[in-house]
Structure formats: structure tokens, C-alpha cells
Image (cartoon, rainbow, N blue to C red; front, top):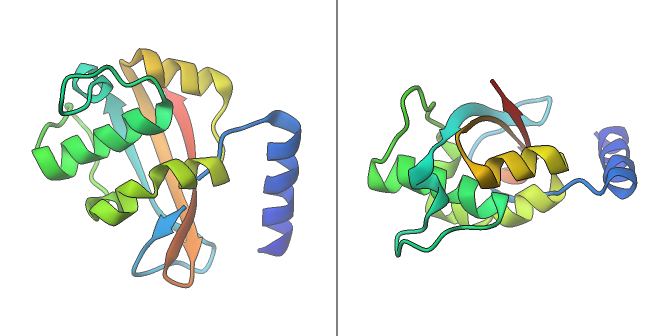
Length: 136
């Protein structure tokens, strides 16, 4: 695990990738807590006051709030138990700072109409980072 974190830190230092942190009730031996796939649609690009979101972490957080709290779901959005907890959604920005996402992926998320794949990692009852990628 320490080697993985050192590699991750080195990757972040050299690539400037964005990172993330949160809590969870159960973890797996390899550190992967949970994975999900979601579509970032138009509803995810605006907060509950109708203000356009401009940061990828805000949009991903809104997507999970829409899914879990407001029942606003895009077709084929997958559920996750981790961000069903509002405390974990609040930690999403920090978790993304601790994780990885390319600049291109961030730009695509801000534009919307893209699929994202999210891997949530952690240990000892706490989510520590997320890795986010975009796909077709």
C-alpha cells in the first residue's frame, strides 16, 4: 500500500492530476471500496439554485446528490452506497484532490454529456481518494 501511495504521489507531482477524501463503513483488502459509472447530463451541471457549476468535483458531487437525494437520474446511471451518505459527498472535493483525473477528463465533465467511471479507495473505515475517468 505504501508503494502504491508513493507512486500515486509521484504521478500527481509530475502530471498535476487532481486529487480527493471521505468515510466509509467497509473496505476491501486491495483498497478499492467501490466503483460506479454515471452519465453527466444537463441536470448535473447546475446546483439546486440553478447556478451553473464550473468545477468537475462540483458536477460529480451534484450528480451523486441528484441520484441519491433528489431522485434525478440519467438513464443507466449506476448506484453506489458510498456517496449515498451526504457526509461522503461533502468530502468529494478533497477525495478528488487526493486521487487522479486528467485535465481532458476534467474539461469533458465540465462540458457535460459524458460517461464517468469512478473508483473509490480507502482503508480503516475511511474513503481516502477517488480516481475518475471518462469513457464512451
